[in-house]
Image (cartoon, rainbow, N blue to C red; front, side, top):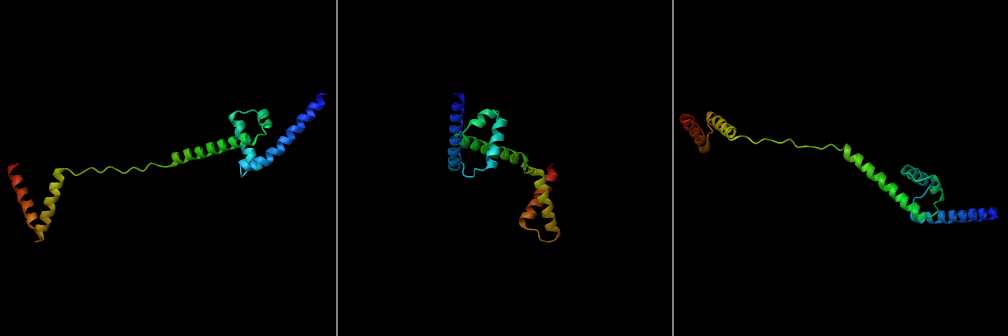
Length: 136
């Protein structure tokens, strides 16, 4: 009696496997033995027991597992890429002080005056510098 029950279960399981092999391609288009092995190893690493994995014949369950595996793998790759990317920082440039700007203007005005190309603005800068020197 138990032999008949065992045979019926085995026959039902083999029928389920045939249906699974026909249906899985509709749900996971690139299904192959390699994808199956990757999914199995992924599930084992998650802590799913081998007995449960051996009994899965529903293609939807395998599809969900496959999608989760792919999502997990791509998110881990993204994290690695983000870790590798160096942060480029633009060095901060300090603005010139008012004193430095004034001395640069005075030097430029002196150069122009020494070459004979002094403009009215250059003359004004030199005059203001002399006045500042007298009263400081």
